[in-house]
Image (cartoon, rainbow, N blue to C red; front, top):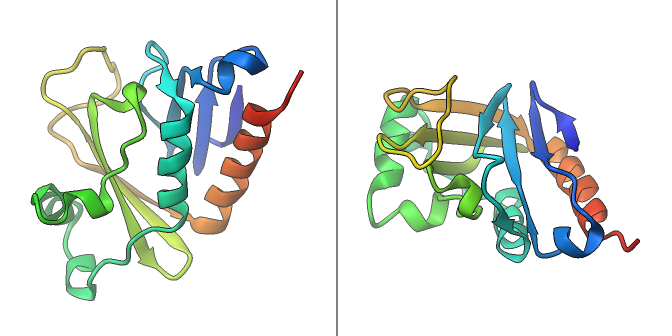
Length: 156
């Protein structure tokens, strides 16, 4: 299943029956055409839902920090005093990544992520020495999340 446009923002998952998908599902984010996460592991849906709520209501970033490069922002987010405010804790499917997000400008969310140096799963098209980033319209994220959650909650 694919919810959204992968070149902008999408949720990609392995289809599951309605009882299973309410609890656990294999899914990844696709941001700017890049898959973040693995379909080889499941994600606990209640945790994922809570994180999605934070993503659509992101923290704002100080204007001086917004002007930093993606690498500078990533380093700032890794600081123990700031990590919790900006980190996306999406579940087991995303354990090989550090994923951060914030409101980059009015009605846009910027995602910044990096693959860990040592991973459990293989990611052929990603490198751990690159920090990836992309801005996505908040309204688009909301639309995709709404479609996904309606599908998750649908009762057969």
